Image (cartoon, rainbow, N blue to C red; front, top):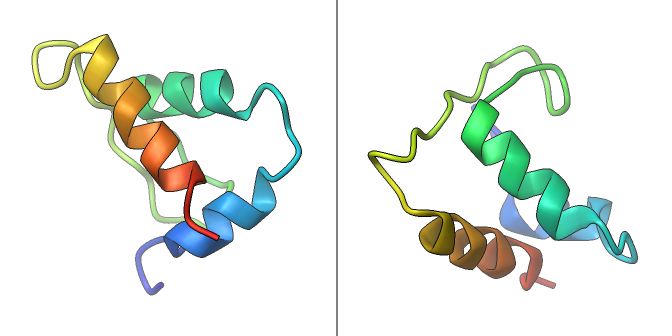
Length: 65
């Protein structure tokens, strides 16, 4: 929590958002900051994770209730 949100917090924030999967996949690829605080999230390039792996990771994050 000191560096980023819990998986439950991510899941709760995007609950009911039908576009959450695609939004978060794009955020994982591009990186960013400001949504959960000042600590930036580095981008994950395609060379480090395939599109299918990113889809699986985001689905797993959103499944935490």
